[in-house]
Image 1: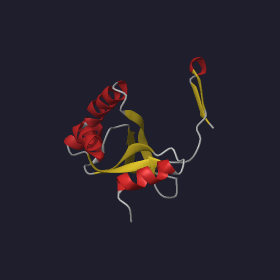
Image 2: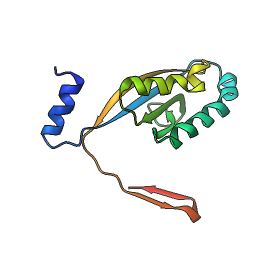
Image 3: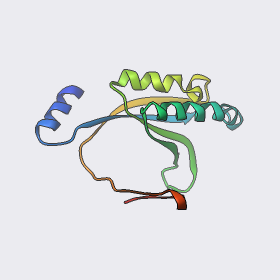
Image 4: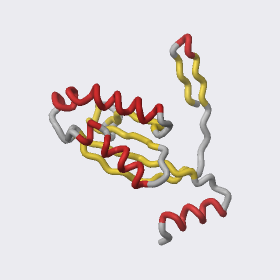
Length: 128
């Protein structure tokens, strides 16, 4: 099995994009009341990380059936390394203050397409 950096180079040599992002998966580690108390600081931090160009996407995730909120979340960072992504996640008040536990994994984006249509006056967002 090749190392992460070897795999990235193999993918690039075969014409894949090999665009590296970092996924933070989080799970509740505190009662909902504590998470609600931390939430304003978490959202302010996310806004700072977004303004710095490091936050790609973030939000809560459902259970496996897609019917109920799981209490979990996912954040996708742009970072130069997994260590940088881990530091960004560690500094998030939701993690720092014990509201959530998290793991960080590297994600090598090779395939897919993205179409985006934003209509600001209608508060509409379409991703096709």
